[in-house]
Image (cartoon, rainbow, N blue to C red; front, side, top):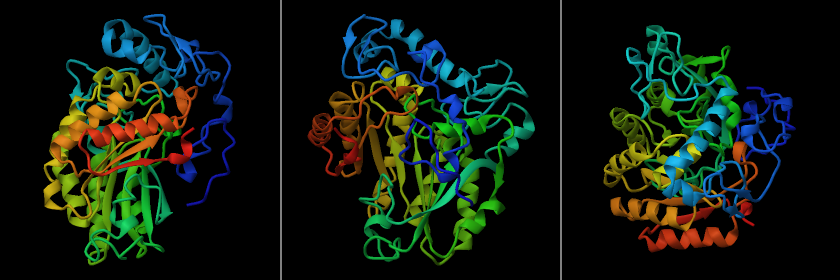
Length: 413
């Protein structure tokens, strides 16, 4: 795959596939106009704002959300209209449905927590499929919107500190080396769709693929990318959930192709899939030595909805279901959790509750805390402070977790 020209956009990216960096014209990345409700995508940076609900001056976050975390938790009825307006406008710019379609007589998609009900020509929340019979049968199942690249190991995987590729864990059954698999590659498959609407998404440029004219890929197109130096396949995005049937179909074909060789199947996901899809996903990772990395965005359901556009009940329930498989293979770990430390919103309190929840399932589940870099609609936020990150690390350990790591330390200030 040919590399795209270097991107000169004003918004930096931590991990964006090379061919995703340039398609969105820089003229779209306007900074004039202040708050995102004014009509521009990216507003001028400010490190404080007045909460739209309580009118309090907030000094530890930018105005991207418009509502302070305290009001999100305690005055949701008043905060919700502000939050919904921001999410609606952020999606309309990409021609994505402003809310989950709920047509009474529509056809239901049962892949994720939304369970969209759509008319024949109406798009679901993720933008991948429509309510017509052909789209439901084909899109995200037999063909997918994706990009891919070969990532040299060791890579910046959120689980590289515990996984087989980064540590040699599970050698020789699940790793080709006793240590990092230097000389091998991860086939990084970036799914260009998501059923969340995270306002801080670092890979937001994939949203343009939901527009008409996106390039579809079938399993046979992707199979040649699995070479003898490919030791793992990782699905991320976006998120693999909206196109999970395709990922499962491709994974099975790839494992058949490389039968007898180490080839791990891994996932980076928001964890919002329909419970019926958990077992086939787990089975692939369990038998191949791969891991399922679930990004737990927040503990409080209202904070979660403000940041991501939806609640987190099914995410937590699914995490608990996956944790039930952990005893079947502990080395390398099957399940890894991560959380982005969003300044002002995801701090010690959120991390303590999330860590306590994880520890109640299994205190040895690895948990990575990630430093925040300003992106997308929250590009007016500061990076995570070092003191806040250390406090969150301590909170996770106090909650009972045995394997906690503070990652992205270079982003801390």
